[in-house]
Length: 470
Image (cartoon, rainbow, N blue to C red; front, side):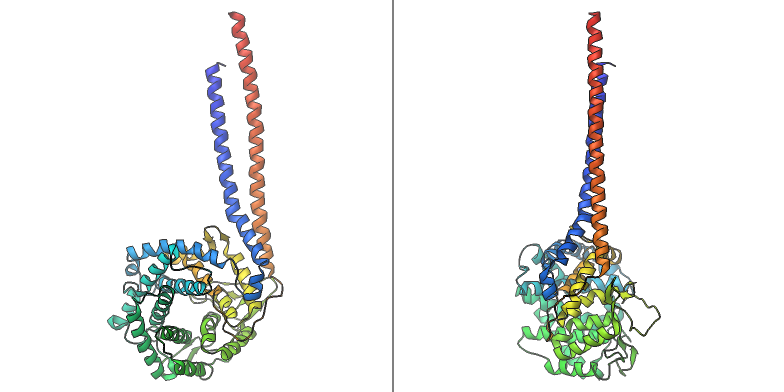
């Protein structure tokens, strides 16, 4: 073998060795991000004394700042492309999630700023706050409700959309001090409050011939939040609504009905997990005592603790038929995903940290946390509305609901076994991939050294032969 040929082969081996090392490096980095990072995150949550005592993890501000970057990227695209105009008006996730998620972002930013955990007045978070308010206020976002209600979509009923408008813009003003949306917010606050006050049982439609009482409660909570910015209140409306919900609109389980006829007050669907968790996110802001009663009824009829998982079912325990729809989200191991995810905030709002903490740990473990966000909620958001952030923002919104209830119950129980299973799986897979790639790299180094030694011997032999003929 000539010296140039040997040199070329040696160079090729080095290039190939470098490529193999690069592949191993990529695999190791992915293992750290996709498996070791989740394992470390779960371990931190298990040891988080703040989570056990207050129901809220010390990691939440970090997660929110990270999600703000992804939210901002999505929001820019959503606004620049007028994405809302391209949607079919009955595509519920695609139409509702953008404004829902933007309000969640604003309310979460407000609460974290109030606690001094996030500065939402500058940097990426401030930019995201501005875009969120723009999405909430934009008439383009309302394309689907215009289709349902016509040009007067801001003048009557349409409670779901108008409630989100009021809630999101009041949080924006409280965060920034900017009153640019004050006129729109104030007009909607006053007109919707008057409409609900005059309505039979304080019920109006969300969509034509569709009325969901939980949205009425959210609406009154939003109205009260906005009213405080103008040094006024709607205490009489709030008290009357709670009395109705705890009276004529109460289902047999001791909780407000999921769906009712707005004109007659007839209950169409009884209590359901997704609505129970949703209304309990804000019920304590209107009446702490009644909210506590509702939560106890919720626990008695919907709480599940199998040892392996904890959560809230979508239907009461005595309803044995399986049930799942777009409102409940996926139902896994008998627990509704929406009921359980928002159950974190429902429990935290009434001071039941003994539920909020294990629900938080379980939800994060099942969400597959990574440095790039929570993969499972991210994938669901991507499929539903082209966003990797909105599912994660909804979870963070639930985790940051302030405690308004009268009791405080710290978490001192056992962790669901599924958390330990996932912790073992994440760490085991991560360590396996890292060990395997390190082992492969060592083999490559030994093989390379061996081949280099043989090449050196052949080169010396060839050089000796040449000298013998010289």
